Image (tube, rainbow, N blue to C red; front, side, top):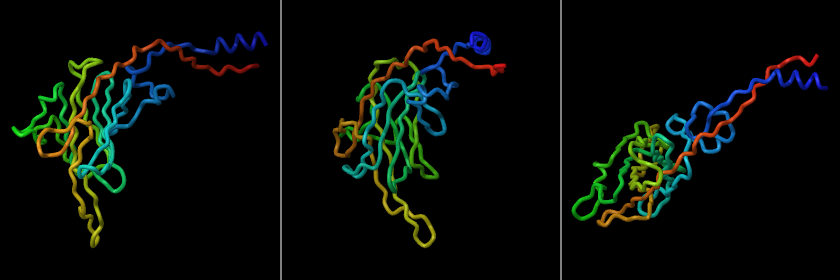
Length: 209
């Protein structure tokens, strides 16, 4: 039994690996996979907690969600619709003060001047806007306004036709002051964990005999 134990020890290669919020290559570890999600074909490892808003069309109809989060390099704003709805366009304003949101003199949002504006052709069920972290730091409070055009398609005489077209906003609880309806939200930049040292043991298969 003692000889077998010694063979097992000599058949192990001990390699320290660093993983967590700052190591993206090690994507097979179950601890890391807990907080991973696929965004536009890119794996996102969110730090801390995300903020999830209802995506509301026609002022009171929930058609999906807007998820806001960050890793150590980027801020992510993800639109996702449910049911028969599709995203035709998504716009996001991102800043540090509500006074920075482009609005008219009467307080209506000027969506065409938002930070990012993407038209989706073909239409999509979800899309993530990515903003570089830049000078933002954990604890900074950001102001985000998320707008989209959502549609329902129906096949008529062999062609897919738009049968419903609505404007939709992420309901962040802060209404614009003008007559045009819509909301903006706040998001606190989350701190990413400091990478701990981990030891992973790889076994070389040595015959017991």
